[in-house]
Image (cartoon, rainbow, N blue to C red; front, side, top):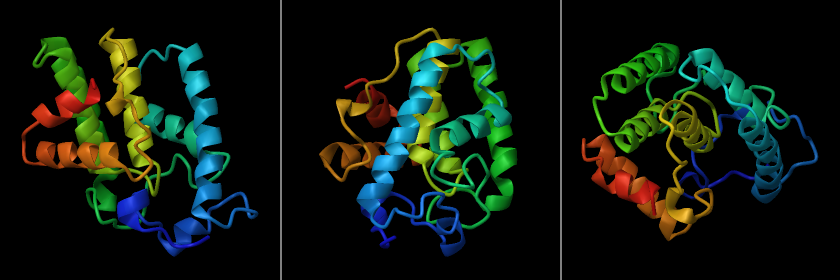
Length: 195
């Protein structure tokens, strides 16, 4: 597979991670995107037909990632073992995810923030943790939509009404909003997710 520009396609894969590709006929980023999207569409269909009871667990997050990418990547559902250009150190992924689940449950129980802000804070932090070798943005968006639908009883976000995997103005706006949230300003992300 050709090397991808990380600014265009997300986090680059470590050579060991790239060896986990289950479909040897894939040789281009375009083919990889097609097969990943096909697998993700199946996971979305499954998620829409089921109402998982407790999504705020580390095991559920891993299972969802495996459903999303398990037909394409051998390591789907496994935490990354390498350092990336974003994310917490790999050795802290499980601990940070557990803290995120606990914090989110607290926010919901105590109505710490409005529901959209709870979901945005959850999404931002899950993206910041960056638990998997690849697929983190797509996983975080689906997890956030499940949080909205199942626990907050809110409609899913529109995510700018655009494909955020493609290099475009919407993706740039989304990345800028995430960076603003890194600095503690969640307003741009709150605005983006409902446009």
